[in-house]
Length: 110
Length: 114
Image 1 (cartoon, chains in turn orange, purple):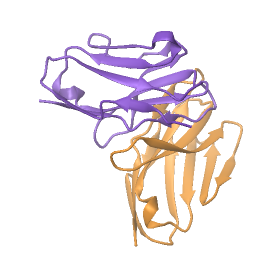
Image 2 (tube, rainbow over the protein chains, first blue to last red):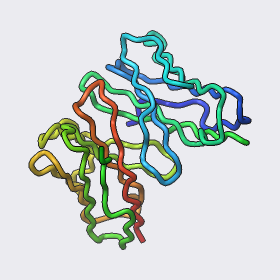
Image 3 (cartoon, rainbow over the protein chains, first blue to last red):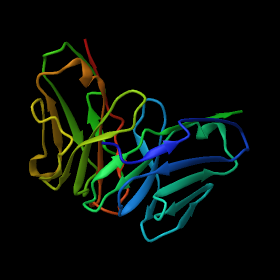
């Protein structure tokens, strides 16, 4: 069964705007990871945040994790047309079993 | 470094036929994953290997799906016999180890069942 659930399912913004995607999960985790997938390609790892971390940054990406609410968010700042893709959160459970959500489809209009 | 290699890229078969997919992970990666991704959905873990041992196969339909990882390197995933609902992209991923390690994905095999 899927662990994470992303929200929204789809998001359309203009270039230069910020994009925020949310992920909720149900059980305890070791870490939470965000991936990007372009059409017809495999997934590309973006950020891994451990259960004892609250926030991580990588370039234009910012990820937060709230284990009390069992939720995470991915913020992409100053979006570009090349950021158009599907974004997935994945949770690693206590046994490092991986579960992905259904994803958020982001469209950035030039 | 070379990425995760998968073949074939595309496969079309009729229902009840058999099919096999091959994956070569990144050199030195101990953990290998097979996922099924149905159109419009997120990847669903089918099986996870640590070296040549199975860590998690709780979501693998064992009556028709099988996988092996000989010598802890390459892996094959087989479906026999295929059903219409098996139409999906089959993704292979690898990581240095399980737990707190990013996964590196191949581009997948797109399977169509007629």
